[in-house]
Image (cartoon, rainbow over the protein chains, first blue to last red):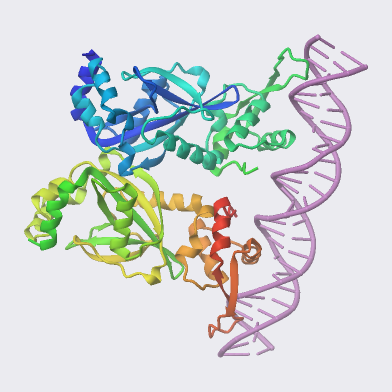
Length: 260
Length: 260
DNA sequence: CCAATAGTGTCTGTGAGACAGTATGCT
DNA sequence: AGCATACTGTCTCACAGACACTATTGG
């Protein structure tokens, strides 16, 4: 048996039974909003990064721990959005097919005890995070052989109710847009006005007027303008901007209006 | 020992350990926003109405059950707002003082087994409800000798982190104001424009211009005007209004702007 | 008459949205 | 020059907010 697995199994008793956290980690790349997903070993089964809660651990710290383990990032925007507690949500169609579970056990990826633990009813609390995708090296956990960014428009089928969890997180993201450090968290330090507008368009799922967007954003006065960015393309070069962190955070407390 | 208590104790094994729900039930009366609280038997200790979750019960159904038991109301607005999972939140200062617990046990209100159950760490999910205060007869539960409405401006000291839970619910209420059937849930069927404005003022904690409020609300076109209400006071009698339920709900889906 | 509150009207400033016009970088 | 995109300006409409005016009820 895998050494890690053995240790993990021994630690099961240190976890609160029946509770878990799942993280919807958002990133933005190539004009796509993406989430970080794990692919289970030797399967085509995908899942959100998640984990259990130690008996002496705050719920939020458990989410933070999962985030750090998968991304290495400590200080990112992390927020609870909903707790999923339907009785049927834990019905794991994948593990219920004994064929797969036995295969996994035969290969030393699961143990009987762990399988039983996983088949209990779980109440899971969803947290979402906003991260700069270019500063992260996703790390698979012990049960997964890959950890990848997937566009929210082309999500694979996920275990349990993880598709619903992502849908709820997206809804929350849209509603909370005016209060979240969207740009600062999801974009690199310097970016063009087009980058920022495209990000808002992707989240709101509708086009925004280029001119009006720029005027409105600049009027809010939380961006610093830098040198122009020579792209090599046959057109006028755009300015680069960065956030005036202090001004931005003050504004976010009140909320930045972007119903448009 | 109390018969109910005995049955309750036998049912402990049917509950999920370590999880609970707490309901912040809002009502509106005499121009005050109020919450429903329980006072523990033979003490001055107040608490939110709450309960445990049966192993085969949806989380939301548990909240609904608590609501029904305390208010008798089935179809009211009920929504999850946050899950509280700090390790220290369950530290029950009241029950930790052995004097009180022993007194309660001596009087047959608590048993040793129940006390131990209560002293575990709990993760609780907060739900809030909006109800018409005049249509409710609050019912104390088996551990309480009264169930009363208390103004949010003069809350007593509550057990555990229940004061924080109420604070979070209020914050959520304020943010979600534009998407909640505030008026329909908290006001009687017929009400004056002043009633509605006062309700918004209490929740937003700031005065609203009388004229502008009326103009804006009427323009939204979800109110039906009825006969005037002769109050007997030496002033012009106000009209009574009621909600056009269908129009109101359509509007709420988009959100009614009331930043003002 | 007056006091008190209800209901309506008016004015101003701001800002969203549509769209046009100018500027710039490269071929 | 011509193309593509960046940036800026202008116009209109709607609405929030301040505030004034009229209407009604009862003392």
